[in-house]
Image (cartoon, rainbow, N blue to C red; front, side, top):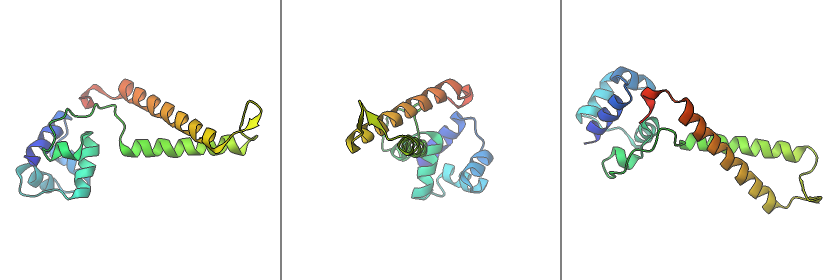
Length: 140
């Protein structure tokens, strides 16, 4: 079942076994073995496959019939990158003139809310960009 799912997802993305092997840093024979059920990817590799195909590991393993995540959903790596960018932005704001709200220095709670707002806005913008600029052949 896992092999069939990998094969189906690969074909949906118009990726050859050779291309998938290169993306996953394995041999083409390994991909072929996954697809025929002669080998099973390790847990780390399953996670990488799930990220690559934008599905959950449960979907890959056949434990979930849920629809695949939309192509524009953010991966954990993208969310982490955005969190880092938002933190850097906040550091930049705080390193200039002190961050003030209505003439009073910002409390830690206010800074945390601002960070969450900035991070949320950045995630929304990233999703929108992925929606607008992902080539059609890579969309669900």
